[in-house]
Length: 378
Ligand code: CP3
Image 1 (tube, rainbow, N blue to C red):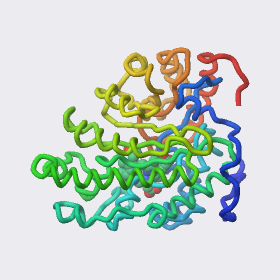
Image 2 (cartoon, rainbow, N blue to C red):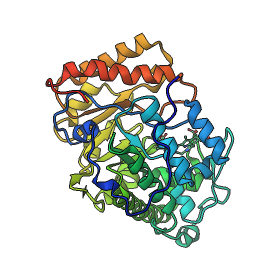
Image 3 (cartoon, helix red, strand yellow):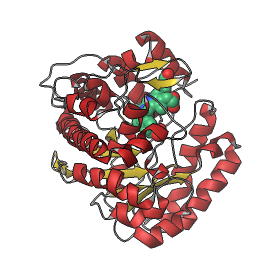
């Protein structure tokens, strides 16, 4: 057993100078900016989650998932768990993409085993007009409080990533009323009432930009936009209904804070056909799913942006030896040089053995120095 968390999250005076603490491991931030690193940094999408027994215990303390998101002390605890227990090179704030629509006044429930539900979805132009744009410092203050606590408790060990859903991905949940397989309701709106959908996406883009800027002001050191459902669109519709609104966000983002650049990561699952367009938004990093070989992605956009990814998350069910072989293969495909952040192609799944997650992180740490200039390893 590993030792219990060494840095319990406790309240601290707001004037605590956590923004002044230098980073002892900034490999992730350097790799995002394609600067030299001694080894490839690694983290996992959805790294704070149900595969960790410690996470399940923290959620039980909060009562339910949404209460956990809204409790800064416990959200901080969940954020730090994968750093302490699995050894990742970046922390990602524990929260959910759906806190934005909830802050816009939509009732949100997470029923056990059923995923998120909005019992009163957005369906008409009048529904869209009635949606308020939230003030993130008010309606989402609990997120900002969690960020401050995480920065204090990380004490510079690794950088903290903030995030949001893309306008399109948020809209799918708000219009469908929950998760979907066919996206029939939102696609009907896209074809029959595109004006209403554009108005919704515009509101969401401005809400997300304000939210991410508030996260940056509160201390996140990079941001990722999750466009989980961009891949269900046609090429033309992706550009008009997803990418344009992510561009509108990026154009509004604070790109420097605490004397450092704040990298922006854009991840569209199923979007590997559109890498050039994604890289042209001005993002610093493009997130890859596992459907493309990373050498192909590098040949296409590697001279413009850093790449994040892209091991099949299902590989974590395989033996540690097989996982290591896959890590070596992806590192070899990327080749020597900088601008790679190792990650999974999508989130880690709840039934992955923790030992396999640890073996994956360890394999990247041990196999990757050979692909970089020698240096002192953090
Ligand atoms: O990466 C992290 O560790 C940070 C935390 C995080 C969560 N959700 C916690 C969570 C992040 C970055 C998200 C993003 C998110 N949420 C996305 C985009 C990324 C992706 O995976 O595609 C989406 C689409 C959502 C919406 C959402 N939240 C769904 C569909 C579900 C239910 C399905 C599922 O995977 O469980 C959630 C719930 C959720 N969000 C859980 C966690 C840990 C599980 C809830 C629980 O603990 O009971």
